[in-house]
Amino acid sequence: MYYDEFQRQLSKVEKFHGHLCGGIVMGTKMTMYALEHLGMKLNEKNKDLLVFVEVDRCMADAVQIVSGCTVGKRTLKLMDYGRFAATFYKISTGEGIRVTDDDIRNQNENETKEELVERLSNTPNKKLFSFRRVKLRLKKSDFPGKDFSKIVCPVCNEIVKDDKYLVRNGIGICRACAEESYYEFID
Image 1 (tube, helix red, strand yellow):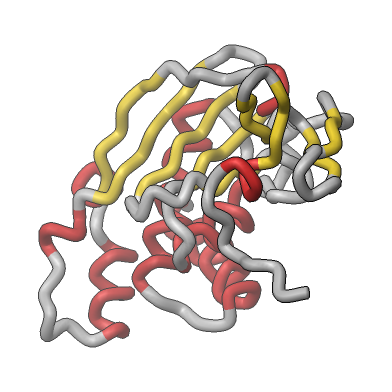
Image 2 (cartoon, rainbow, N blue to C red):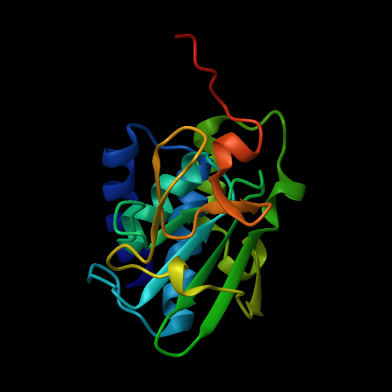
């Protein structure tokens, strides 16, 4: 039963992502594993779930599709720590589960993509992942819903929502102006 459901989920993720790879397999299994431990069902809108993904790679697409969480709904958060890990948080109970990849230590450089996908698909979750309960440090502005707050940055004059600004000398300034931005204005 589990293997059939895994294959259904994997097929959905592959279609969304565009190809099948180790990250897709791992993200699919990781999410199914976490949802099972949180007592949540697959293929249902989980308004009670927040997911924090720690890498901007293939795995993140799998977590999005299998969990139903998205950035636009503010239920999927990209932490971009460069780690193959995700934390699943059940809002109603405050239960948090962080799942990390243990398999990276077992990978063989000569393994083909197809061999990797096959091996990961058939390896038990307990051998692939570390699973730890965690307590999250969340603010009211981290939860989904309407805008929590809104300010206008006095430097660039752009709107910043949901407390995503930094305070400098008692003034709220957007992160792009307060720190180094990924872009530079040329006009």
